[in-house]
Image 1 (cartoon, helix red, strand yellow):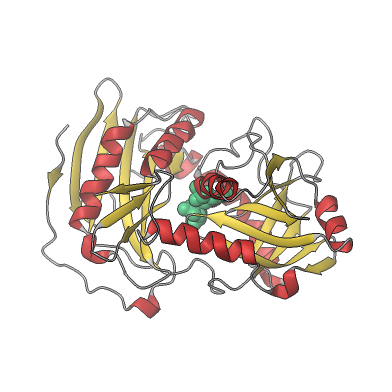
Image 2 (tube, helix red, strand yellow; image 1 turned 60 degrees about the vertical axis):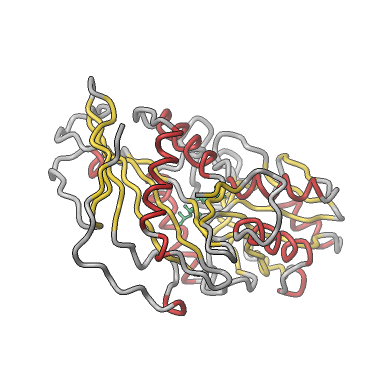
Length: 353
Ligand code: PLP
Ligand code: COI
């Protein structure tokens, strides 16, 4: 399928690098294609960035039939454009599509569309350390129909946002609230999918945690509220007594691509990594025994985010004196080094334009 390009006649001014934040600014163009049952995906196009026209009855607005992804583009020192693991994101989009009854996309075509859009918008890739061009592909159900049923028409859209750090803390450790009342997902639900409803379900706990001074919540399993799952926008790792432990993929957490990259990198250094069930109690006991060395989150937006404080059932613990630990720092340097082409990519993570 050919991708047509209609260029904007009113290019926007680029935001200053110190005003980037996360997800506040958008580039000049977006990619759009439509799906119609019986016809498949069609009308692939790059058009000026702008509002969508949707019927007020359209399915996504009522029943949340929507999926999304998040990945980043960088420039190396020679100005080449690099994408970090775009095939993994598009494969995961198809897993989310399957759970939400949304038709599959052609992974190769979707990566090609992202490449074409990013190539056109490459002047929007910020180049200072800690910045990148965040890519947000998403699919929404557009049927004008109020029955609860998988839609027959969809839009696949890709928008681009130049970003700095996700948390106002930057690489400084964040404070995380271990949530033991609200739950995000249960086994058999949609936890493993990147779908709008999971984030809607997370807002209340997030709001309460913020009023208590915490950046995000750490979710516990939805059945026993005992085992650690993930943070609002990242997976979570604990370094205990020299070993790195992260909750195993169990169907209710997102299979993070930064999580997978971190596991591969840690293993390549000879660090023992365990993917298993880990309870909040085990973490707090390890802290009491002086064995909890580091806690960090991993995510595309958050990259590697050290955790300096955890609060669970009123008990607060400070991790590594509230400072970034050596493993978190080395992992951050390595991942950002691979992403920006400063470190040779022996993992095959990076796709060049
Ligand atoms: N968990 C949740 C709920 C997320 O929203 C994200 C962000 O994408 C992650 C984990 C980390 O996933 P990834 O590393 O693929 O960005
Ligand atoms: C990402 O890291 O790409 C995310 O999707 C996290 C969040 C902004 C929802």
